[in-house]
Length: 412
Image (cartoon, rainbow, N blue to C red):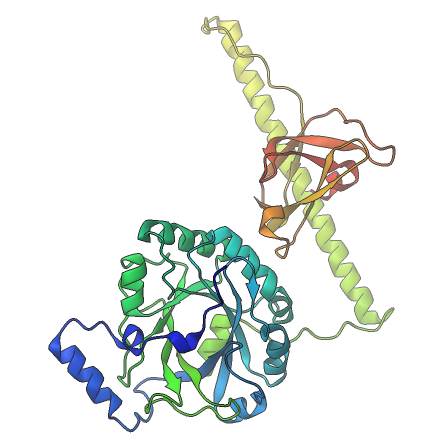
């Protein structure tokens, strides 16, 4: 079993710059002798990233008072490891008014999908607490011995699973060695690790400057140009966000906790209930309109076939009419069908459809607004308490037939 990564094993040369010339080596040596670079020529926001290797006690109020405004926590690694400090630390940072993000340490030996499953499950409590307004990162710096081609596929699979919140952390040198400068997807952000006192980082090949939003400038306590981080003992990675605090909040989204619900039975609660009822009625009206449109199209197609037969111009044998089925239109902007791994008394699996982004990926099938679900008209054998209909053209990720409960069909 691969041991969890220890950041103390990192080599400075992997993160300082690509050394492809005498002058690049000279610049590195010169940077080590600089006392400190005071500020940047453009607006930035300071932040830190932390893992279990940053020893307690950490005082997040001191971190905030020192001018830092965001924390990126390591949540997981590989397909099963969870950082033991993540669950306890993020609520304390949140209470100190620090913006929250999280990262997953990529290991070559597991698929991108299994690693994304581990990561999404680990961060779910934080993800819900910040109203799903955050950014998540894939830390690509370890070489466990697979081919570049396989590594690129697994990185892409991971980013697909966490889209559109995902981004990548790496250095220019490591990104070239590990991926041969794989282009980042347009939706993915970049978090570049370039330990230098320069005013601008070197951007890895395959990335764009516009999509590179964070820069790890170095380690406080190790590099002279990196500001100290009061509240964090010993060494600490320091990062900057390219932009001011308003731009950071716009990019992350509002992480403020939702307001408390109104008292039960209050006027506000009744107004909310009426608003929800209004949207329910409007959604059902949209379904009826979609069905009416579909029926109109079917009638037009039937009229065309009758016309062809009357004119005698169609001499080819006609295919049999399609089997009868019931249709239901998805009206939610984003709906996931969750395949529950349980069965009724007669051995039929149950599939519920409801808007849910927190279900494990292996139990999730995504639908789009306006997509039509078709079920066979005849009910299958039941356990005596509920009727089920089999979907005509959808299966679970494992290839199982899926069945909808009759009680759930009306929601479409």
